Length: 155
Image (cartoon, rainbow, N blue to C red):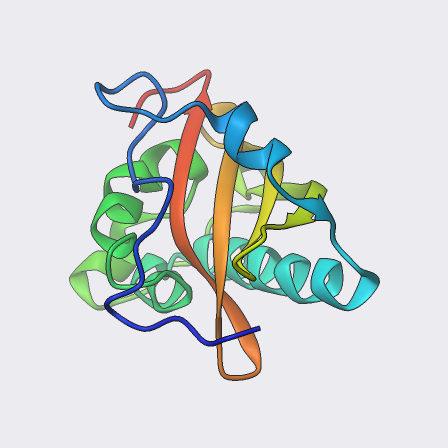
């Protein structure tokens, strides 16, 4: 798989589901083939690292696991995904156990251009959410290059 470059177009914008211009996520997901175990493990590791940062109250560190185009939208989604705002002010404050975000990756696929996609089901302080992510490879890791999220809370 080729690493992402800043010039790489994303098929899915970093736009919350329901916003104008949101792509047909089912169509994007259907483009790919089931991901091999190594890719599933890599995207799962990224998702778990993001959840750990949110639970540590450090969304700024979690943003490092998003590509440049997706990071600004991630900060809009932080209230829905979980994670204290302490990290936005520079001082992370871990969340109490009962407010922590839990996630599960499902339906990971590899698109014809080498990017990976997956659905992430989770539960955070604002309730349940589902995130659809497009992952791009940067070196040995995958980062979220684009995403859409919906849930019981509102970002």
